[in-house]
Image 1 (spheres, helix red, strand yellow):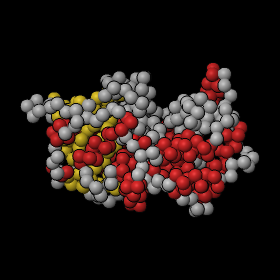
Image 2 (cartoon, protein in one colour; image 1 turned 90 degrees about the horizontal axis):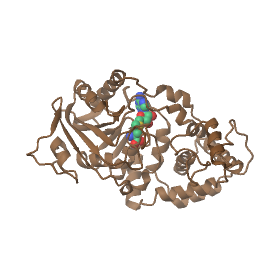
Image 3 (cartoon, rainbow, N blue to C red; image 1 turned 180 degrees about the vertical axis):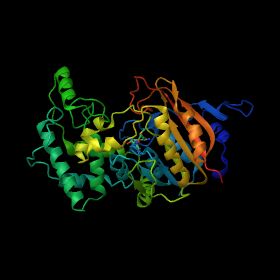
Image 4 (cartoon, helix red, strand yellow; image 1 turned 30 degrees about the vertical axis):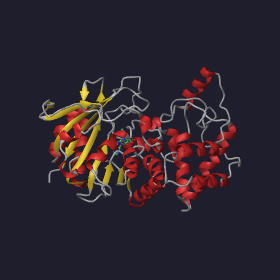
Length: 409
Ligand SMILES: C[S@@+](CC[C@H](N)C(=O)[O-])C[C@H]1O[C@@H](n2cnc3c(N)ncnc32)[C@H](O)[C@@H]1O
């Protein structure tokens, strides 16, 4: 492998395990940029660390950031994601011994990410869970009876009140943050591993009215779920491949991590020339009704879903999207080190009639980057969808299109 600073687009393509290319086969070019298309990383999701298994709409697989972090950075380098979501880039970078910076306009992003860097021991989570009193009769401000058995709802309300009190009083610690993260992830889902009765997969809460219709169809009333037991079970699953060395690496990253909460296009607090590698995936046009899908997660965390939704980039045309992305790329140029990299992942939208990767090329050049390559990772559909807001079996795509940018020396 070439030294990090002198990696070329050709190196990026041919060092892939599945690569068959030779220098004799020139790649096709789009606007002069070479396009390499193959299965760059394996589609076997199980190979990723289970610590990633926190669902989030439009998340990419950990293998994607791992591929670039491995080739384009070294331990101790700063890795950034301005559209961090569940924090796939941050968690993978921390597991690989890098420093991390993560931004998202949605505060849920840091709620889901930071606890997986400062991973508490299972024994401590267990002790804390057992210390939380869940039997008080608390009044809910909204009707959630279509999702939860009354006893589950009572436990959930007590947990929510406990976490709120810990945060407000400044007593919140890593165990509390971990429990909040897992509980946020367990609110609704389609298996008995979740607090709710049968509903949509966990990253997409339906409205109370839709849930009433689902319950009528399934003919089921919500069954009791033991909130603390489910949190402990999910905690063990998330930590099933965290050994002492991984915990230490994550902790090191947690201590130095920069979590930002704002629009990716605005000037951030990140220093000039500080980032070795950005691996990111922006929202693709207006395919997600964000406020609607996250309303229950926001309720649990006392966040205003409508206000958050208003800040989310929901471009309705490529032109509108490009205006926002130009600002994002200009900011990325400022924070990227000379010879540092950006892997900018976009998908095919509208059944492949819009290739956002091609739209990114002139924007990145305008921002000052050299566009080194477009990598198209093709693979069969697996559990995690790679396009934001479109289900695996619906109109989505099964390719990741990554535009590779380098800041000149
Ligand atoms: C496609 S998702 C990223 C998913 C991420 N790669 C992961 O693996 O979880 C896009 C993210 O961008 C965030 N977002 C949307 N508009 C934004 C903006 N203008 N600035 C910052 N974040 C934004 C959304 O909240 C969402 O988390």
